[in-house]
Image (cartoon, rainbow over all chains, first blue to last red):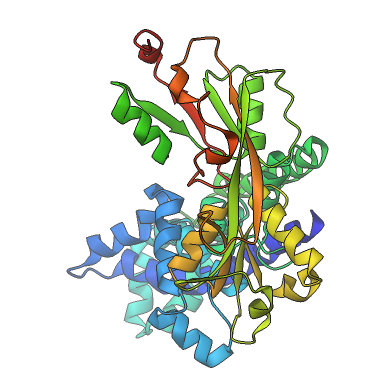
Length: 221
Length: 197
């Protein structure tokens, strides 16, 4: 049980860190750049919100299968299979929690006062210093919410990791799957403990999100 | 499943299959789920106090790509990286596979290669899609069988069910369930009750 919880935490942390890196440029583009395929990109980012996890799991499995381009490239570099590995689960989790990272950041970026951005522009700032000195400090709350939601959503993942992970103890068996198996085995006591822990984690993470949201996301707005 | 098709062909009726692990379905039945027939795999303790039951067997084999074998040693080959097995803790086919491996003294050696499926059909899917190199899968009796898994069929409802639906079948000829560990429960449409005889 402890094993599974640790794997869940590792998966959630890795996914959250990766997502912050991936979501930042995506959120920036969606917030500030208007281009032709923007709606399509927005829809793609939001898809995991409504897709059945099994659909996502199915496509991720196809994507990381040993005979796929990604799976075979991975195998030739790392000499191990991507399917049913921790890395494969990370890929699936990043896709699954993508909207939870992008959308809060995108909203926070959009809420940065126009005048601040224009001030930066008149000083001849390029994207990087603008992000570092104006946009990110102003949308710290949104970034924190993105991180907390990505973490909580990954902890609560079930259908996708069930398909992609292979439930290997100590490697891919996460807490939610361990709980499922405990119930199947009718080990009610352990199941109750694990369920309570997961409930507490979710409660704490959401409390963090709501307490951040209570404060104004953007200083001065 | 093939059996439900046979039944549907003979009778003007529909068989609704509900598949799940024995434990889960057992819980559902205990809580009053309206099933007519319950097929429970493995030798798990099923306390249903039901005299109307029959026995049958499911068969387990090892699949490499498109090939079947009974040679457990083949699993040790270095080019076999991942082996799919139904979860031995929840699926009778997985438990049977583990027992076979343990008896051959291979369980410890092969553990690092194992990938756990929810049931043996899922293990079969993993092999067929090339996601794993080999797997413990359900097979036909005529194929390479490494062990067999008993299952029990319980008639749950008091309704009269057509005699040819169960009694004339000797246990040995009971159809192998294609669902393997997904212990199929047949839930017969209530209309069945009227037009059986």
